[in-house]
Amino acid sequence: MYKKSSKWYLLDFSLLQILFLVPLCVHALLLKMPLINIRTNISEVQAPDALLKRLSAALAASTGKSESYVMTLLDSGVSMTFAGSEEPCAYVVIKSIGALTPSAMSDQFCELIKTSLGISKDRIYIEFDDVNASNWGWNGRTFG
Image (cartoon, rainbow, N blue to C red):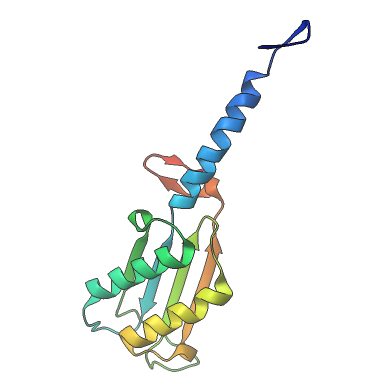
């Protein structure tokens, strides 16, 4: 409550809560959720842990989010074909709550996968998924 002239005005407390909490929620969302999942028909991946760490750092950098919330998965030896061929290929899923720039990220991750796994860029599909905060759970709750 505050006084203006000789009248008292009561501020709506729920509005104050919203004005205070919205920036906190936005900040929390900016810090969390990037995921990259690579499926490939290559059965013998050299140094998979090192690859996962490179992917984690790259995804954090490209989304501007904290690496402490990035998850990386590598599923190798998957039975798959691309263009009717069993030559090395990969299917990549990158998910995040916001912060995705597919046009910029596509070449970046294709190049990283090509360099790390030897898969030609034209044999890599990448799916980008901007996930609704209410559809992503962590630590027993969702973000929306």
